[in-house]
Structure formats: structure tokens, C-alpha cells
Length: 638
Ligand code: 7RM
Image 1 (cartoon, rainbow, N blue to C red):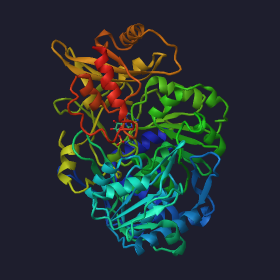
Image 2: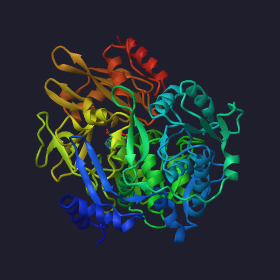
Image 3: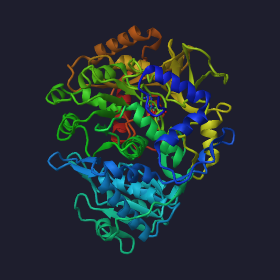
Image 4: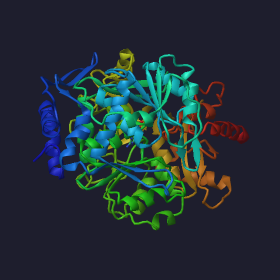
């Protein structure tokens, strides 16, 4: 039995038990078996959650790109590493082999060096989903520079904040990007942002849309001519296990974004291990994660995890609805995708559309379906399972966070029996704990509480860039000696975990704790409903009143809204009980979402409660206009 690849439920339990009893031995064996080290570690783990300080594989030396590229060259050199599928289906896909990836990363790394980037320097990457994005990430890692990828949908202000927070000396961007039928002037956004960023010396610009842009003399350089001149050889910088690999910003409920810092060795081992098991990746598979590399899901499960396993990873530039809603399924058929990993919000948006988009494509190559980013509601789970998986592909509902680096709680397909909306069981090495309000750990099954992790795993972020105190306060101060996730979870009769949502979203009504997710699940069962979000507003008698924002399916039959309101409350009563009935239901054309598809309840809460004086920063929303529509809709209700 290998620790590295779990093949049966029995093995899972055996390996899991070992990983808890002897975590150091367990991770040491994984690290030994499957990675290339320049020097072995002195100590597997050193930790103290009260400082907090976490060190994995201290003393070891390595370069992550040697693990993700070089060691596959012998034997897998001509295998496709990155399969690039462009926005426009008429443009040809690119198969970037491991050999070619090696050359291109080395060339890029040499360009970085020639432009003054050294080990430890921060480089901001603001690129669309084109090969240069993955290649520039790896090029930074090749020379020990710390990459900070900013999702290319963020505004100039958001970009400037992130560039300045970690003092990036270089920005890598493109002339523009394609997004469905639209183009976006990325370089213009960078120019705007850089008015506020004095530390940036160089901007490297990839050509993607051939737009005419301004190039600032002495600062801006076209990337391709530099790459063409650069050598294809570049010795990897040998890094310490705990050297930072990258920074990735995540927005908190308050304050400025937190620059989560991930380490080199621990992150590599953890993402590789979880990728292998959660997707049951086997040689010859074609794995596709639809996330943007600008998010942690893309870092860990488009770039590092797959490449560390010598996998073929699809990188898709476009959107699910261009040229039409069959785009995802067309790609699955075209490349014979075996593992497909996406977000509930994408599933729900596709489920709104006609099944014919899906039915005209052969999806029989699929073996595993993944979900990530938010709780997946039952209706979406079944739609995914029945129509995409044809009831043949297990769904892995993977719970994790930017901070955790990799997947923490998830079924292992073909190993763990799945139940809709349950993330099921922890990955080896992960020790969840559910806590009550008094800070006590809840023992046994059939309990619900706040989700903490009580032992370090190799992928955990080590600090917040420039603010270790905030790291400590945010994650290690709510409960003694435990990492607090900010999520709530339930443990069912057999020990399966169901993530109930952010604990800040629990609403107490007449003394009853109501999670927003189960209420939303119930509402979403209504055939006319597309999506919904529930918030609580102060109420004299009940403590809180429930206010629901509901978007309707465009394709649904039109009904009287008063009837719909009754029917929605009827469904809630059926699923949860009359206590969860909504006091107010507002129909709205859309919900305010972050660029990664998370509903911004903070904004909805303020609108619902009639406090629109200060909505905070709404610049990071997908569609800021929707906020005004919701405010007007709220006024019209009265
Ligand atoms: C990977 C990612 C983290 C937050 C997390 C949860 C929520 C993520 C699930 C989920 C229920 C899931 N990183 N979340 N996955 N909730 N089930 N399978 O999304 O940093 O952007 O977000 O997302 O609330 O704390 S993230």
C-alpha cells in the first residue's frame, strides 16, 4: 500500500488513521516517495499555533519547477502539460508539451532576471487565461521570485492596492483580453493603477488582442521580442522549504485584502497529494478545472497540483456562454476531458438553460466531477449528477480555502460514497474540529458548530504578507490552539461533514439558529427560481426577520409574484419549518457577486435593512450596477 494513492475505502481509513497518529511519519513518506529534493529536511514539522508558527520539511532544499517540469522530461517530455483552449472556438487549441513548457519557462525566467528580478522580489501578474499566465508563474518560481497573481477582472484601484501592499517591482500583463464577445483593455487598467504605484520599475506586456496601447518609455516592454532572444536554459534557484512561493490576496469581511503567503515545499506536497487523490488522476487523463488562475483554485489545481503529477491540465480562456451555453460541453467532447472541476454558481447558471446545449455533446469521457467555492445546493447537485455525469461520475464536493492551500474535506471518487451537499470526509492529515459558542470541541456525531482544524497540514498559509498579527487574530484567536476557518459545519450520523456556510451568515430567529444555505436550498427547489440569498434584519420580537432576494429563471413560466411568494414560503415550510418563512421576498434581476462568484451578503444585508448610506467597497463586484437595481427594487416594495 502506498500512502500516495488511495484506492479503496479501507485504504482511506488506514491511511487516515496513520496520518493522525503519526502525522510526521505520514507526510515524510509522502514527501520521500514522490518528489525531487536537492537536500533532505532536518525536521518534518515544527509548529506552535499560539505564535503562530508552522514549518514543514525545514532544512530541505528544492525548486518547485524541477518537480513540476524537469523531472517529467525523461519519459513524458512529449506529453501535453498545458492544453490551452482559446476564447474563440475557431482559434486552434495549443498543446504545450513538458519539453516546450520547460523551454518557455526558462526563457521567461531569463527575461525576468535580465529585467532585474531577483530571488525574494515580488512580481505582480495581471494576465488573462493565456499560456503566459501559467508560464510566468512558473518562471517566477524558477528564479525564486514571489508571484502575486491578481485576477484580471479586478479594477485599477484593487490592482494598485495589491501591487503596493507587497511592493511589487514588476507587473506582467497583456495588451488586452478576450471575454466572450468582448475585449477588455487590460493595459489601460494597469496604466491607471500604476499612477498610484511608485515601486513598479518594469511592465512586461504580452500581445493577445493586437490592440493599440500606450507603452511608457523606459517602463513598458513587449514580452515576445525579449523571450525570442532569451536562452532556453535556466538553472533553477535552489530554495529553502519554507521560502515563500507566492502571495495571493483574499478579501476579508472587513479591512483591506489579506495577502496570504504560501510556502514552497509544504504547498507543493499538499497540492500534489490532494490533486492525485481527489481527482484520482491517472496517466492519460485530461483534467480540466474551469477556475481562473487568479484564484487559489487555479494556482493549486490548474498549475501546481496537476503539473507536480505530470498531468495534462486544460486552461480555458473563455466563458461558459460564448458562443453559446454549450461551450463547456463542446470542450469536454473535443478534448475528451476525464475530470471536470467547476463552481456551483457555474452549474446553476448552466442549469437555467435548455438541456439541448448539453445533449448534443458526447460527455462519456468524464469520470469525475468536482465542485468548489460555496455550498452546492441539492438541486444543482442533482442537475450536475444527472445531466453532466449521467449518474456515472462521482461528484467531489471539495471544501477548502485560499488559506488552506489545498482541498481539506472531500470525497475521494470511487472510494467515498457521496451524499448530495456533503463534502464528506477529511483528507489524510486533516483534523477537523467542530466548536460550540463556549469554545468547547463537540465530540461525537450529529453535532453542528464552527469548523476549526486542530493540527497543521503542509498546505496552510504561513502568514499574511506584512501583518503577522492580523494572521494570528483572524485565524488563531477565536479558539485556543486551533485554526478557525470562518465556516460552520455539521457532522452527520456516520461522521460526514456538511459545510453549512460562513458562520457570519447564521441568523437567529426567535431563538432558532437558521443557516442561510438550507433556506436558499429550499427556495432554489422552486422551478421558477434561479438563485436566492437570505439575510437577517433586526426585528423587535423575533430578534431577526428573514429577508430573501430571489432571482427568477428567464425561461420559467411567468406567474403572479404574489403567488410565487406564497409558493416559496410553502417550500421553506416544507423543507425547514414555518420558523424559516421569509418576512420579505424581493425579486431581483441579479445578486451582487464577487468576481469569483460569491454572493456579497454584506451588501444585501445593508440594503434589506434599509441602511444604504455606506455600502463599503463595491468596486470588486462582477456587476456593480445590480446594487442600484436592488436598492430601487427594495424601495418599490414599500
Ligand atoms: C477554494 C475556495 C473559501 C470559502 C470557504 C467556504 C466556501 C469553498 C466550499 C465552500 C461549501 C464547499 N477558496 N467554500 N468550497 N463552502 N462547500 N465545497 O473557494 O478562499 O475563495 O473561499 O468558500 O465558505 O471558507 S476561497
